[in-house]
Amino acid sequence: MQATFKIWETNRKIHLDFLENYSLEQLNKIPQGFKNNLIWNAGHIITTQQGLIYRLSGLPVLISKDFHNKYKYGSVPTQTTTQEEVNEIKKLLISLIKQTKDDYDTGKFVSFTPYKTHIGFHLATFEEAINFNNYHEGIHLGFMINIRKFV
Image (spheres, rainbow, N blue to C red):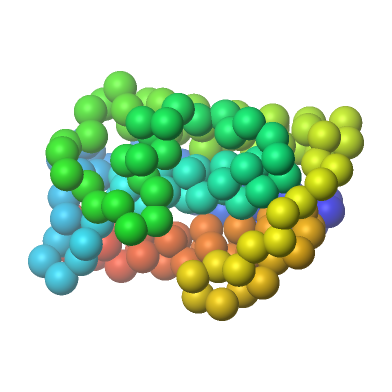
């Protein structure tokens, strides 16, 4: 699991770099041909991780229902994200890794509800879910790399 967590940490630091190196206007811009923006992708990976890792393990998620609804699968940005919200996302990108690692180390992930993703991946264990989460976050990093060309 150490390698899996290391990949996740590295990926999240790259996502965080986007939030620290682009203006609020750039983070909120939805380029022509895209359905979302840089900040939505960062919020979305947080929401997805909480669902895949915590909800499917029968544990309470560590984000608000409003946050979840704003960034869940199928949602699109409907309003400008504020600097306060960007700051919350920046904090969550890092703090949730530490919390997840701590929860893993203390044995909190003891059960898991199998789940089939909308693209056909079957996740049967916590380990499969966290590996898929890394894959998913990599996809959204790719979207962000493309979006940044147009902001």
